[in-house]
Length: 282
Image (tube, rainbow, N blue to C red; front, side, top):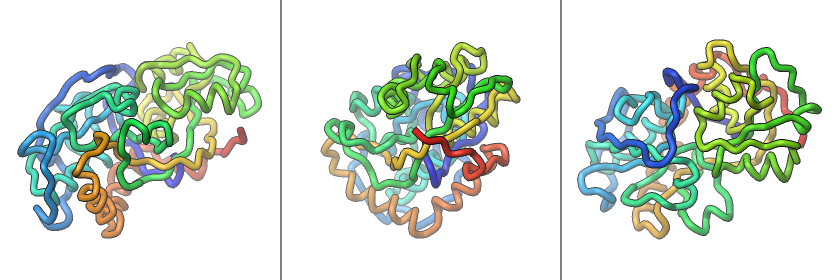
């Protein structure tokens, strides 16, 4: 995702796997800086007295922690915290779920899902999207000693994550000769580090964060422009959408999201700017 805003510390991210609804934990506001007026808006939350957020771990830079109960900061986490703050809700409950279940609208009793989700027309049929808060591009990561180029990628074995827009992109747009689909982010990047695939592709900010956290086992070799937009997901038909949309727009307008970008995303990329990654043609 380009003009990106994503990814920071998540210990052992390459070894962690989170499929299905793995765990849930109620937390406070963690280490997040609060902006705006508490209780300036209100909703009837899915679970009374708390703001329930569906996530997909590992999410380096977005939700920094190995499990929901260890998350205390990150871009999307602190965005969720600030939404809860402006709703007058003191508790934020994180629920870890598989990405494909999130975009298929299979989760219940939550207020918003935040997982670097691309807005697509098929997904709009089963879920409602929030106000867009990021733009996106696709990143390509390989094993550190691999020699994968723009020309050779299509003839190699490419790993992508189930339920993401990268599946049709790799199969139909790139027409890669071999596409392996993984259930979660961690197993996909573990396969790349082990040389089981020639390259893996996902949101560029996720790639940058995972590579920075790989202790030299991985590298970023390229990116593809996707023209995509990133937004949160609501349960279809929720009455909370207009209120939370308004808060997200306020967070953009008052500079809160820019502060979160500087605090959690840029450092997590290991000093590598997205603009320095070559843009490949597809």
